[in-house]
Length: 318
Image (cartoon, rainbow, N blue to C red; front, top):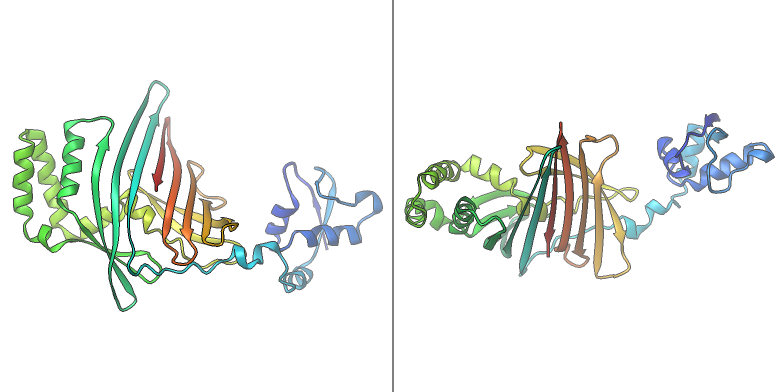
């Protein structure tokens, strides 16, 4: 038995987590069975008072009962991935705000992303992904060029593992074999020296297979839609790593089931793990279909603060 002095803001739940006790109700039960009458705990902990903690052996005995809420089957789903014959068009909206002490700039981009299952090879699934109907609220020539350049490469060929995580992203055969013609058409559409410089860099990235794949894996839609949502759950949690486009950052996330009231859907919530980088705030919400494990819709918000600049991004896929 250990004596712990309660700190402001502490709860039975977070103290139980610290000592690896799965059911916090046993923390209260243990304390009340061993404390003086005036120290009995109901539900709210009082800062400064003593809390008696069970030893390692007692914690293990409590955990062996497997009756903690976090062990409930509905909070630890085995999310499948059955994309056969799947085809869906999503609307993607990306809002970004950059703030500093003197200024605030906002931008919005929308487009459609068509995801179609093509075939299965071994344990891998192959999809074609089209990105179309771009609308950039800024309406600049360079944003139009960037959008037209992406459209010219449709469709992208995405290969995932058996859980829906990206293995490779490749150009389709026509774009790979005839990129010279694609570039000529884009130069005709955008006869500007800055456009020519952009397209030279674009050609270098496209024709370098490794570079192209790395950049496409960092693409906002690809990165979020094919995220590792179906990693295994344990004690109500699963874990994944997410890339944040534009910041060259990866963040480790903890995922929980937020809602199972609809038997046909699983609503997942994602946050940064405890002790993660305090300059990054992340909140993700996905609705996946319980029968197939495919994404119905998603909302992701993240904020990155670097020195005096705060960049906030809100993405919806629906």
